[in-house]
Amino acid sequence: MSLFRLIPDRPDVVQDQNRPNKKGTFRDWLYITIFQATTVAGKIFDVGLFILILSNIVLLMLESVESLQVKYAAVFQALDIIFLVLFSIEYLLRLYCVRSAKRYATSFYGIIDLLAILPSYLEFFYPQWHVFMIVRSFRLLRIFRIFRMVKFLDESRILMFALIRGFRKIVVFLFFVVLMAIFLGSLMYVVEYEHNSGFNSIPQSIYWAVVTITTVGYGDVAPVTAIGKVIASFIMILGYSIIAVPTGIMSASVIQEEKRNRGKRCPHCHTGGHIPGAVYCSNCGEKLPS
Image (cartoon, rainbow, N blue to C red):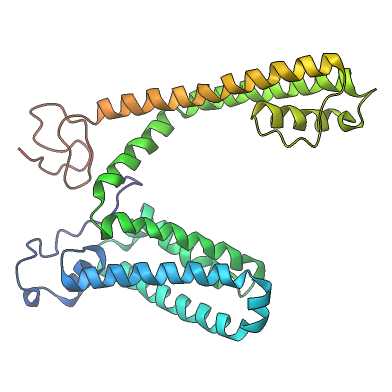
């Protein structure tokens, strides 16, 4: 089962949305309302859920303001409980109406939905976990489906697979950058430690090297010797070259992934790259459009 599957499979649900819902069961109607936005009830549910999630995120931000927290502590606590109850009911209804609760629970959105309510329950034992409720902001990803922006999901899927395919190259590159930072930081320590209190240890010098290579340049530590300034200038120029490398790796991976996704695309699981003349999807086995 693919992690990027967006909606659990329910072949037993009425497929023709123009058919009267009275012929289906309550569970089927609930599934169409929660997971699909093709009906009036489904659109109302999705927009209402979007407003609830956005309101909860704003509430969490306001709670971090100390003056408001002291003044409206009771109100914030009551609203937190209300949001917890609503999101918990919604999650249970999702598990109830899908054909396979386990399949939904282990899907991408299923994990996000669980993580959205889990910190609220853990907060009763660990109060510091309250801030982790900001993970609910990831539920705003549903905006792509609510407002019919599925093409954006396709593009994000291409970007994700491109990142996965270029992961090893990026790891090798980052390992090289770490070694470079350790070497240059140690070199600057040798050059500067007798003349500059800012380079009082190798870890401190490595920190300066990382800040300089990434072109952040806090300015809290700076070389004072002539040789140190020459090395620093070399590191600054090197930093610009290093930034371009992962960009090139990602660009090449995205181009390769787009080539793989050319051809027929399955309307069921959105898998692309099928060879010309393919009749069934290589991932889920559904029939491809002609």
